[in-house]
Image 1 (cartoon, rainbow, N blue to C red):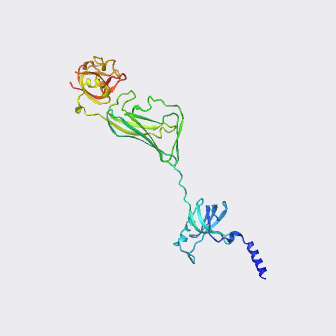
Image 2 (tube, helix red, strand yellow):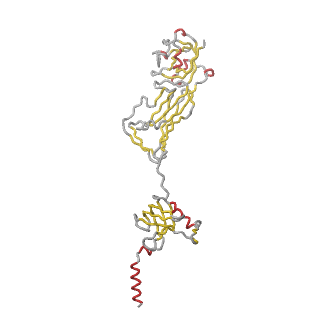
Length: 360
């Protein structure tokens, strides 16, 4: 009799599906397919398995929260075990979940959710956004002082920013006054005709630094005033979107407080006096050379240049402010000139004037 009973028990056990014997909690990773909400906080969820030990990847399971601490029909929502299951009521199709489940006692019944956690969505990467900033080491300069310009490009996005350059030139800079371009960094420079590709990584900054010596495209000192410095990348399709500008001012010194310099002090040591601010007082002698090495060979810059002569020698005066003296009727008039010492191509010194005063 005992042997017959053992055979019957073994035969019954063989008929019971293996999954129904799983009473221990199993892990589940899945994506929500649908949510059927019932009276709060009950819901029935269907989800497609993507990982875990509960079922094979790709299977679709039906899940119901297994609330505990239930008194009659009242669920204690303040119970820690129940609190974590409340998220099931608010799930949406497409949500990814990580859960602990128990298999149903019978085939076709829902699986029981023991705990549930919604996987936060990864934020979408921001596209590459290039922030361009141009700056100078100061905002106010004296005439002739070098101006250090820095062009910085930062990728503020979440993806690399590809840049394609058709030559070895990476950027350009200009200086303008009242809308008129007076200086361009690339003017007169040669660049290799080679295609270059670079990627600016998210958060990366690339910087370029150059110095403007306050001269225009002809090599002349620009006059005092306000200037707009503009910089940009020369990458394909980026010239307009990477522009940035900054305003600077070049000041004009007070003529009354300046010490008068003799012409011979400049002529004797032209390189030592280069780019220095000076004040000269002498007579207007027109454009015709007189005696003296510094005025031989004609005007150093333009036909509007003229000669100032004091008791020690003669020197040419150039610049926009100097052009007001062009009349023979003003020959020999006493003038005071303030400007900066420059050198012509042949090494002769001359004065680039920013202030010219007739004394009598």
